[in-house]
Image (cartoon, rainbow, N blue to C red):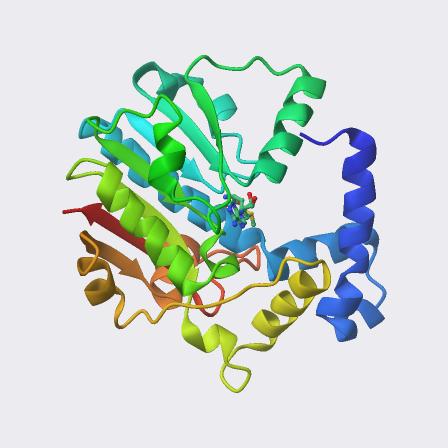
Length: 268
Ligand SMILES: C[S@@+](CC[C@H](N)C(=O)[O-])C[C@H]1O[C@@H](n2cnc3c(N)ncnc32)[C@H](O)[C@@H]1O
């Protein structure tokens, strides 16, 4: 979705960010391409890729079980509906996102001239201001149809209350057997005495750009917390599990990040 000019501008800026993330490596004067690769590898590349892989592999399985609606919460610049036209044959896709992000994305799609698939629906919502049930009721989402929700890279930007209210909304509006996949940071990530150096830097940088991360979730109580709102925790991957599943034996320097967990829950 970037123009070549933007891509090169972003690449340059990200390469410069190595000075912030890893001053020692930056001091060794890598060329721009090497610095950029290091920043992506240490900053967000492995997490973004593995969470998308986790969600989309689970979605393929869910479609075989009869899922007909895919709700992408906090979709950001996710291009699923454009990348996977093969899956739209049996799927309606709902991108639910903050009104400002969604407006930006929609204008970018118009500029690019990408054809808008008839199966893609946009639902603007601010999770801190409106309940997800009310937002989905404004759309063509069908509460009778088995659904699959993903919520990637978002929970850490919200308070625990908003996260659980939104999860509860999924349990309220989706039929039993529907799925929600989300990633979350553990509570240690927000404790300066326990969080990793990388995590502290990541939180510092998003705070500086005005989008602070707020709260984590305790993986040891997640099953009970979800049960209380009508969701059954089917899988709860720790950083070690994610390393084993997606990064074991790789030689490209990509690894699971500390404090990042993936959860898969089902509406009871
Ligand atoms: C880091 S991006 C994640 C994008 C994408 N899901 C991914 O996996 O890369 C965070 C997304 O959360 C959304 N978001 C953050 N706060 C929100 C809120 N209060 N209400 C709705 N969306 C929110 C942003 O608009 C953005 O699309």
